[in-house]
Image 1 (cartoon, rainbow, N blue to C red):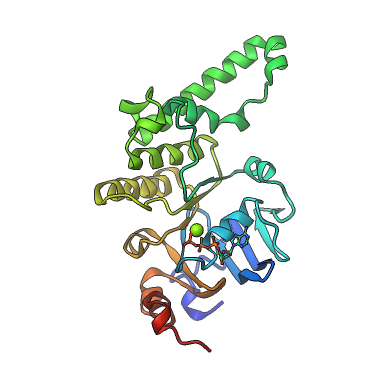
Image 2: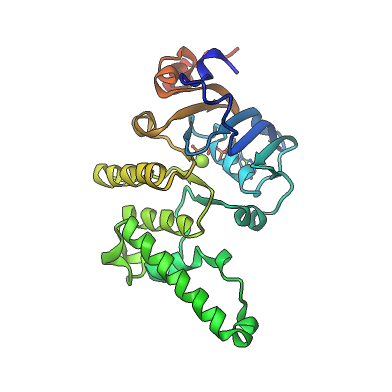
Length: 273
Ligand SMILES: Nc1ncnc2c1ncn2[C@@H]1O[C@H](COP(=O)(O)OP(=O)(O)OP(=O)(O)O)[C@@H](O)[C@H]1O
Ligand SMILES: [Mg+2]
């Protein structure tokens, strides 16, 4: 750890991270997507990952959620090693994500999409539901109540019975966030939550992300291209370029780093070693 990564109040030394991503190598035939990527996320922390196109940001999420299996490294979530686990097993441990491209059922309503986010909370299958009708019904009611709370929290009430496909883009992104929250995760992964949004939609989303951190205390990893948003929201930032972390620290430290500035100036300015 460099001096700049030390928290000013020195709590990092005593706080156990929620997530430890350690020295991960991920290669596809001929392409190195991640090389020596390490970072930790503390309880309640909003940790951002930024970097140019193709830098490896989504690959970090795909490793975290079990879609890709890296050739080297370790990813620990609490006491659990995540590498080698299937996506559904990782989701059940309490990691939920939103996607860079919206992945919702566009012909289903907002409420139904949010209910699908709670499928880990449905211990009763169809047959069990016949045998345990009372319990299954209570479970269904509890799920509906949880979903209504998310509708309130994300201010989705006016659209709750509308098919998601008919809603403005910014609202669809919010529903996706709601679907992830419906799983009651212990860690939330946001892949470009404001991509393609107008200014108003971006400001709304920024407010909800801050509410999730400050009111729910939920730790988050956020991948984002919008440098301004990341600087405003994140507690710490990791900059990746060509699959390698080039700087991790507080927003102001990262913004002042010459290597980071260079990575953001584009190919023609890049100093090739
Ligand atoms: N399934 C795959 N097969 C082959 N190469 C892949 C695969 N997934 C990612 N890559 C490669 O790994 C590198 C990192 O991709 P990744 O999608 O993680 O980048 P990113 O930082 O999310 O980019 P963007 O900003 O465009 O979303 C790229 O070179 C990409 O082409
Ligand atoms: Mg990506």
